Structures are given as C-alpha cells and as structure tokens.
Image (cartoon, rainbow, N blue to C red; front, side):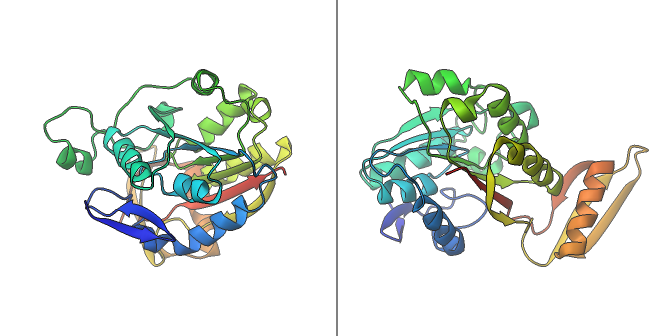
Length: 269
C-alpha cells in the first residue's frame, strides 16, 4: 500500500485514489485556508463535521487531526470513492461514519460510472451511483444534534442541496456554524450568495477561479441549437461573460483545463 504524508496525515496515492484536483501536496493553499477556518470553531471539545462529496476524506482527516475528540460523517455518491475515504481513515487510525449516497442528485454533474470507477471496479456494476439520501434521517439515526462544519463538493448539486437545507430548516436544526462549499459555475456561485446572506451567514472567503489558470473552453448550446465556442483567459471580465452566458443559454459541457472549482465559505459564529 503506497501513500503520501501530508501535514502528518497519510493519504493513499494510487492512480485512482485522489480527485481531479490532484494529489494532497497540490492542495497546500486550500489546506492553509481550511486550517484558518477550523481554528475559529467555538466548540473545541466535540465538534462535528459533515462532508458531502467526501471522496478521499482529506478535509475530514485534517479536521480530525486538529480535533481528535471530534466526529466525522462522510457522504459519498461513488462507491469506489467512498472506499478510498474509508481506507484513508483506517490508515490514520480514526473512526468515522461513512454513508453511501447523495442529495439533490437530479442537479448533479457527476457522470455515472466515470472511467476511474470502471478501471477500479471493472468486474462490478457499482460505479459512481448510489441512493438519494434523507439527510435528517441519516443524521438523526447517528444521534447528531449539531454540525459545526458543513463541507460540500458535489459537482453542481450544491445550490439545490443548500436550498434543501434551507427548506427543511436543517441549517437551524443542527446549528450549522461554517459552510465550506465548492461551486461549479459562476451562476451557481452567485445564486448561493443570494441564498445564504439573508439567512444570517457572512462570507468568510470567496474564490472565483473556475478551472485552471489560463485558457478554458466552454461549449455553449443555444436554444436554437447553434453551437459556439469561446476561448478566454481567466479574469474579472471573463467571469462576467460566463455569468451572462449561463444565465441566457444552456451549458452542455466543459472541457480543456477544468480542474479547480470556485469556493464560498460562510460562517455565523
């Protein structure tokens, strides 16, 4: 078993053991941000972190290394990805609750049976797929009464998921303090801000970098079924163009250089 060590945390480093954002050492900037956030938690005796779209469980492990008396619940839609997270927790001798499934799946951009899943589980049929979960039922079944940190990276379902949390009053029921959410389009990013701020959350951090720095090609399909390709560098003007396009047209795919999401961090400490 081969693994990397990242700030004292062991992480499997096989070809299918990390997300598209890269290996652990490539997340140093995000690590520093994440540490600065969890250092602000008021509950330091038994904090709870819920990670939806957990995959390898890296951020849950960073949280657990900081708060060894804390509790982790990891939700993952991909069966292989969930198994990687379990193995990483075992490597570090931590216990956590792992749940197979997802929420707001109709809005997800996750591809069914991604190639990495086919390669990893080529004799099975359980690629990237799982049941729709009732979050409240899952948390109540585990005796969870509060959540100090909610972390989400769910491939386009993030807005629908947060709307579900709002409609079901889960944000208040579990007294959620910090929400760390990866955003997968400029339009989703903007709508999440408009959703969360009136609920009493402050923006702790915002990152509008969608895709790797440099040139990104968005394929846009107009309603009249004409296709147009735009190629531009990442800057403020580009973000305005993306927002306008997404609000007026249907995006049918993204390619070339996609590797980094937008990010919003909210708190009400």
